[in-house]
Image (cartoon, rainbow, N blue to C red; front, side, top):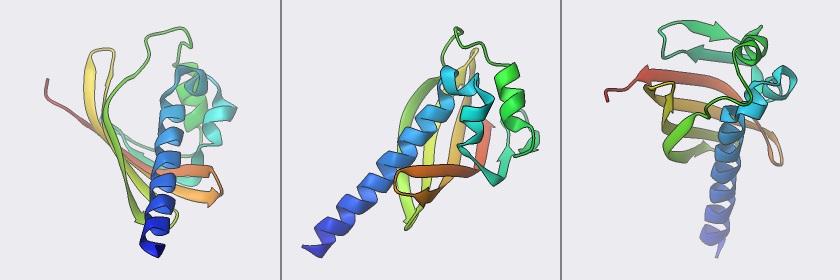
Length: 128
């Protein structure tokens, strides 16, 4: 019975991290710096699909300034997650935004029940 309980708990963590990833991709969140910033861990780091590296400081503001809340939503394919350890989930998917496809991986850390922050993200340009 404990294996079933453990699997349910693991599935819940993965589902919560995936929900947080979808939130971070929503135009409403991306256009609201304070809302996006709550999802970014203070030690956030990204290797962007553009080839650049960014950290926590100023990222939410930069994303908000460049996001049109009424624009074309980011398309997501094959979103899936894997529990790496209790409170640590890796989320993988392919995105398409403005005709640019990228394979993406995020690492999410649980802060408390239902509360997650991303601390690492990587995007790699995908072939068409």
